[in-house]
Image (cartoon, rainbow, N blue to C red):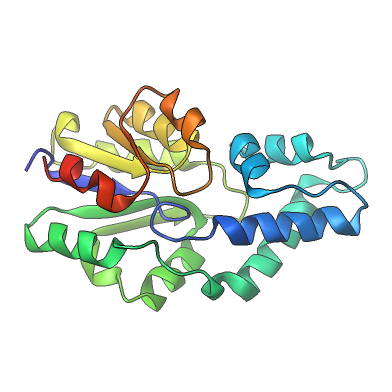
Length: 213
């Protein structure tokens, strides 16, 4: 194996929830009479911290503070999240890594308790040695969690692969000092991912040979 430890992002990388995020954003925009977006606009604008993204959509924080918008988004997302499937090939790929004895972790900007619920819902918890989410719903702090996690790993950083679907995942991997590959089937567009200068694949199956070396 080329890598001795694999770290996964969750939303957009393993869980196919991008379309739902676009729908919820449009519901929020509709309520305020703001222009709706399509998935390409979403993928080209979504960034972290997410409050910068909402500004790009036209939300006025003097009328709707980010905290209120985040709560509005999460309320609908929580009600509808299991409408979203896993991406194709997820279970098979992480099961093969498990069979080969490669430790795996999930490092996510999703709130930890709800992350655990989702991983358990899909019966994937047994495949992961560690599952790390955030303490709140505001999607900030993934870099800090990544730094804490890598500091506790008994493995060389050069042997660790981080797999994500956003520019922020690349930023997290860079801060951690580990390898990164990005999958262009989630929350950021392929051109944005390619600008990071790391391997980019259209699907997990396309990236399989890179993962397994």
